[in-house]
Length: 279
Ligand code: ZN
Image (cartoon, rainbow, N blue to C red; front, side):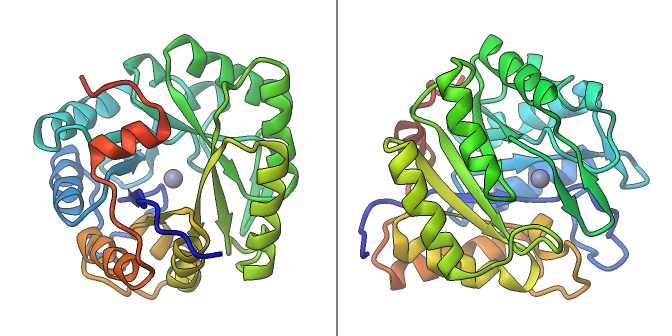
């Protein structure tokens, strides 16, 4: 299963869990987020996955704040793919897509519900359909977040029902406690299923906390794309393994060389994902 196609490195810079105390470099303010993204971009990240936070670090759904971060990233990181998160714990469902009218290139879309460590990540069918509709309305490409196996088949069903355009882009999230474990055999199974039910889809994988690097290696070896970043790194685990996001991106870039995978710059990443030109 070797593959020498270019790899898109995603950086998830901050997430939604208040942790600055344990993670002094975690970007919270608009300017911290722009600066942190710029450093990660220089290190090889072509796609940034964004949450925004209130000054007390709790998740925010303020569309203006998303817009400010987006504007700064566009200015400093030409072509970089901007992906808004529609996740974020404890946030009202009605607010989770409230910023989509700012037309980011992409937005995350979890296609089902799952247990997280301390509660339910709730994505009922009508809510998923509603978010998919919003993304279509603003020409935003979803990144399908697969936290559990059924979500993969629900994504295929969205395509069948005309709510999701093919080719889809799917992310397998592994290692969240109570959700899908980080096991290579599971990833291999998911990728083979993906090829059967959505043959033209692209895919990436994210490993949470101590699983981050192992999942990066499996994805690189199996021809997928790779996600890193402090969001995944500090989640459910107080251990910090890098000083900042750029260091994590550099680590994946080094691994990519080991697996003979050239790193896609932002322009190429847009072509691979079939996105509109930056602007
Ligand atoms: Zn996220």
